[in-house]
Image (cartoon, rainbow over all chains, first blue to last red; front, side, top):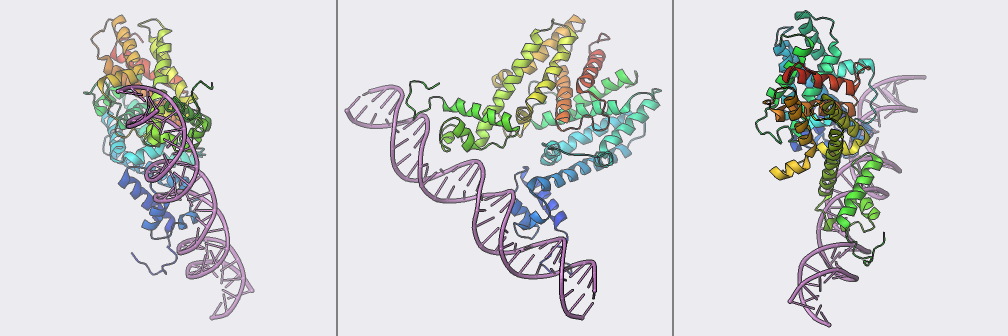
Length: 205
Length: 205
DNA sequence: CCTTAATGTTAATCTTATTCACATTAAATG
DNA sequence: CATTTAATGTGAATAAGATTAACATTAAGG
């Protein structure tokens, strides 16, 4: 761990801080970690972070990036485990999303937190939200496999994402089964997605 | 405004603080108001709030309650403007939701913010989330009107709520039309809801 | 009246973010 | 290689804001 460099200059403080922040967020399940503690965990003084991030929000933004990427990776992994054109792959994407929201509670909420301005360029968008594109491709394949290749898969993906995201966030707020304790997120989502696909792409669902 | 009471005792500080906090939240579009400013706006010292709320989170909880009630009221108003059993009423409920999310940005996010523990009792739930029950009733009427009264309208309502909530929150995060700029939240929601109803309740949609 | 609980007040405390002036080092340059 | 310079750290303020403590005022009831 202690590399050849002197101790005064960290060498990769920016990333060390991102990781430290991520760990604190995971540990406490909150975004209220202190800059000082993150700095300490990265082995530097409390003022050091400001050489790399204008303020706490910027550090959070970097962690957010990480979280979004992380979800994208899981999504890609899930997609790769199912045959193209199958509905199972699509449904599993949703399960992966719900699972991520549960396992990385604080990360998940950070992702959608007041993203302030945010000027995402075209390229930026694609590489950041790779998970979305993975879904789009699954849907394209599904539509083609069902003889309906002309469907707007971006719109379809957005609809499915909304359903999934809605369930994930309502579950996080402990509201998904507020009135009906028997409701199970995954089953509910599957049902919604199947119905949407059946009604949009064709009777096969 | 200056009532008969002496000036030392406010008379209704608790509510005054809730309102002051709500105003600051609306004004700044953020939950980061200071207790001191809320207190000042209510005409008392910075320490006074602690006679009524254990901490800032408790004050926020009270404002959250207000916001949820507010949405419920709008939902009820919308529902009352449409004939029972019509799909229009159901669709309009969604529009009301999206509109509220836009007009009361900070309130809306506060509503789902880390609600911590939250121990909602049966009664509590019903009176708090009245908007949900309004939707359930609209759906019941719709199912009956379409000759399908045995459908689980709690589940159906949860599905529609999820779709709506998902779109509202993704829009708030500026993600709803990240890839396809032409997507319009209301239209997207209408389409999802219509498809779900058609596929669940019957061909009429 | 007199007591007491409730509700306010002012003056600390404490925690954190953030900035400032100075120190140290890596890198580039002659 | 010696020197200059920009980058990156440090410790010591500064400031904002939440929360608490000790004391003041008042409403209400016996």
